[in-house]
Amino acid sequence: MEIALLGGTGDIGKGLALRWALDTDHSIVIGSREPEKAAEQADRYATLLADRGRDPEITGVGNGEAAAGADVVVLSVPPEYARSTVEAVADRLEPGTTLVSPVVPMDRTAGGFQYDPPGTGSIAEAIAAATPEDVPVVGAFQNLAAGALSDLDNDLTADVVVTGDDAEAKDLVRELADEIEGIRALDGGPLAATAVVESLTPLLVNLAVNNDGMHDLGVRFQ
Amino acid sequence: MEIALLGGTGDIGKGLALRWALDTDHSIVIGSREPEKAAEQADRYATLLADRGRDPEITGVGNGEAAAGADVVVLSVPPEYARSTVEAVADRLEPGTTLVSPVVPMDRTAGGFQYDPPGTGSIAEAIAAATPEDVPVVGAFQNLAAGALSDLDNDLTADVVVTGDDAEAKDLVRELADEIEGIRALDGGPLAATAVVESLTPLLVNLAVNNDGMHDLGVRFQ
Image (cartoon, rainbow over all chains, first blue to last red; front, top):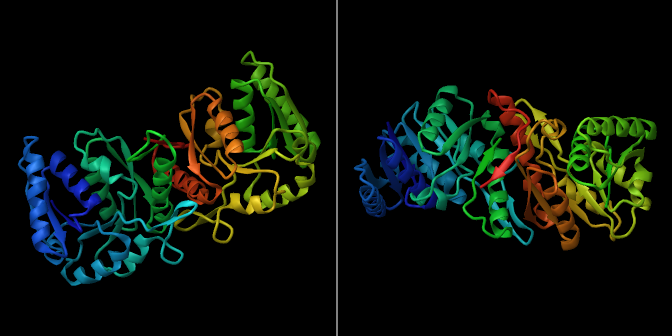
């Protein structure tokens, strides 16, 4: 399976790339608006994995090239670039490719971090509206702390809530999430139920800010 | 300490009453719009506790009488009655009493449960706006499943996020939450940060609906 991480040089993209490269044999493609930066980062990730005795397939290319041919494309970009990134790669996405949104729109206010969705729905639904119809969009990975993912010495214990309207695409993303050691994938319902998943992330940040000894928080439902 | 549970004949009120009566020596007052119903329920709760060798102080009275003289008043009523209940007891609340909102406004849609706050803020802030100024409002207990609380055979393991602007009131509610075995109270920040706490509850319900074997879900941040 080929997994492309658009914006894969950023925090959450790095974390997911490292974990999939550590725990699976999937081919990982790091995408960036700057192909050279993507290639450099891919080399760095490969070195980190080599230190752990792994020899993963990780390459770095432009976002468009990364999107083309991947089975799963993760939109690991900041919320303000989510829509423009999708639009920039839309004609490179092959029918049946699964697009994954880990994106969380947040606003920092005097009262702490707040959820700041576009209009009434989630950003995942806004992304779906900008995505070709034959490319299913799945929400996942919003509630993982990038720091906890990227630190490979850290044993993960976290739930990932997966939402989407295409059952096959959703199952695929659940499997990919479950393949990361310590992650448990859960079904959050249709894409229309993504807002309550995205809005958990500002709560995680607020808890880390307000409680001594808590940082890089994840969540476990029980 | 005297804890009044307005609407204490309902699910979440029952759960909190039973747990405090089981794990602490606080005096518990069940409030209801119908005083006789409150008294009957209080007797039932006392019987349940007696079966466990406990002899708690539990009485049942009208909501107004329950609110008068309590150190902490928990507004355990459905969201549609939150504001009217506060208004009905406002002149019975003594200065310095702490009012706790476990209330979560949710909407059931074709796309699952959604968070449905009044206007732009949380319902806790709307409740605070209807409460006398000398009565601090604290958000807490929104993410506990009533079923998990009420079943005293069930060992709880759940986090409670506490929000509020009055440090003393917030500390008091954190202590009361921590006194329930299996509950860990966390600081969620000011009252303005309550929306992201309330919105976690529809996610918990969606997860219970969509995943086999998951029910009465709570949350643990780690």
